[in-house]
Image: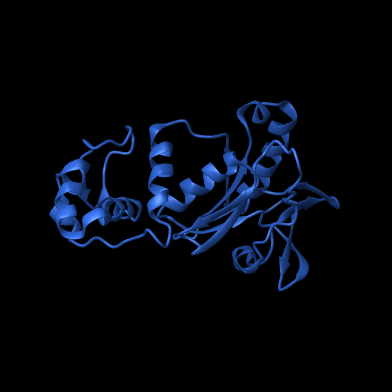
Length: 234
């Protein structure tokens, strides 16, 4: 039996609606929610740098409030299990008071839902923040949603994905002129040289876009280099 008293407040077709988290088809409601965030502030001398990231997953822009948030959006965009990225999808309300506005909602191809809150490590460690996030986790877990608290990622993987994201933009997301299997087992440097004989200066962007789309794979747990070995996706 669900015990959460949390209500979600969303904007649908220009109207505010409230849906008890424990009732109804929450996923369908949220999919219809307008993704334009309500609390973004653009102020002089603010510490964070907000902006808009063009996400291949959405085929459109996802707003973010800080570069830390942008980093999480890039990783979500690269994740082929994510089908939709929604910024600030709803208010979480209990006892008439908003206690959390999540930063992102990730809808997955297998119908899973991940709610992401982004905080700097020093802020996430504060007792008040930990208590608040524990409350969010409890409420979301009752309906089978995952609550992720993201504080950044310093691994080479994240840096590699950030680098590859440059190749997925519409004007650069070029299709490979050859089958991925033709580049299987080659280093990136060798593959670029081979492809340059066919497409010239488009060779590197084509390989970068293929890596972004997971048509070509390489070990992203270590820094990318010309020596990184490519293999074709199964």
